[in-house]
Length: 194
Image (cartoon, rainbow, N blue to C red; front, top):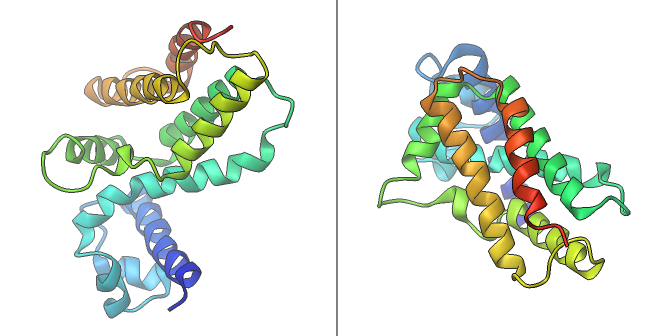
């Protein structure tokens, strides 16, 4: 099977699963529901995933799909720090509106275990590629300080995003994630301004 077809099939399964998780809840969603909505077969499902629990780690795929949607909306002359704030706002908007809190908490908790893949930390994700390009462009244009490496800046940015998601989950979603993160991210990004 060609690589693009494999990504497309896997993506259909992931999208169907998260749509169902949001609409029906994780516990109420069955593998059969996911297979039906994705238009795949049981064999295809199990080719990509060991079971429903394995889909928890696929949330990073959903995040990356969001970033791919956002790339064409970024004006080429937009300040790099504004791009970073925009990406954060749009991701957190998606989280608040389409990702159940308990599923986000489950994903984050799986990333704390010593076993298994650390999906959120995968440096090959669209997320990290987009951050690298944005920060490097910002440094080239004189918008972002150059006494730190691109990777150091990205690490700090990603750390803050994860911290905000963890805190929001720990607080049971008791506050507006977007509004709170805008304030925190704004203060944080000022430290990287040249």
